[in-house]
Length: 432
Image: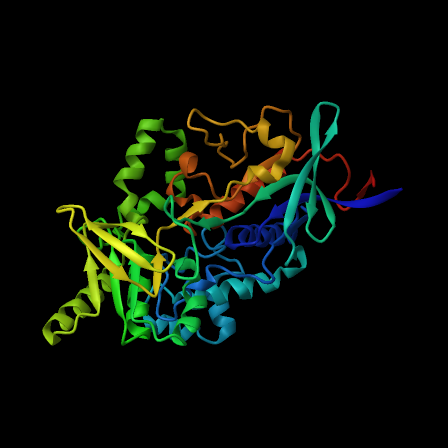
């Protein structure tokens, strides 16, 4: 028995902002004079969503609206944030606002607006369960991408945009009272029904500060205890010169640098993104702490230069001072870890091909400048990464700052390297 398998130039795994930006670049490429590039994307979520658990309605973006899905690649694109504002009837209002940083919920709405315009190339609610190589002699000619709904797509190239995964410290297990900040808004509604008395928030970055502020607002009878190893919240370095680390040219410089230079650059400029908080939010939290000291009712308590040394499933947290060793035991209704994210390792999806992906001495994937994974086996197309390339391409690996440019480079690489085995849109016949 045989079945027809559609062949695509690109099959994208995941449909977050990065692969959404790639879908837009494809749509614009195919609307021009060049040979069309066929693609389809598979996304396990039932609809487009980006950090929904942290879409706090007062939170703003930490990146300029000009670093949207398209503008850095194509300033005339109809998919720009400005065109979204125009269609939404808010362009004049936004201009009068004199602000480069939109509300996070508004930027998410922009993403959804853009995703709706290219929804013909994405299957939602469909998880990739396996990737199998199709050989032509010793060469991998195609990839068969098998989905959770039983369908299979054949790809000349894979683009893996599997996103980030919430990270908990070693030894910490999530549970009813212990969770990552990515679940914040989903948990708040349930918490309102239980009249909580105390929260413990672990972390010193933007998300940790936002969680502390929101819980302090939403639960006026509860105590919010912020625990972090620093002396205080540190401001994000968004100065003009430091922000050059996010420039497209900086990716070239970082990629070409030796490992010692890469390590230094990451240390020098980590404050542009990691464990750094907007100064306005720092000032607001300090105002709250000071006001409560004046009033004699301290609901926002900062355990600085401290760490949680024991956390039980029941929400008992033992906090230890790093300077004195003194311990404080807190009974918490919820312990929220704002401890960041880690890139999802895409190689388990690759099955037998995973062993042939080249890694460096530290076990990290070797990635070429055009975001292709280096492989030991001959490969007609390419396996491209959207994310997980911080060690090769720098801080912008998982950030929006360089997304528009990155997808243009990936698309150009695929076009330049394309070897047409069958005309686009044909079908291959596979045994089943």
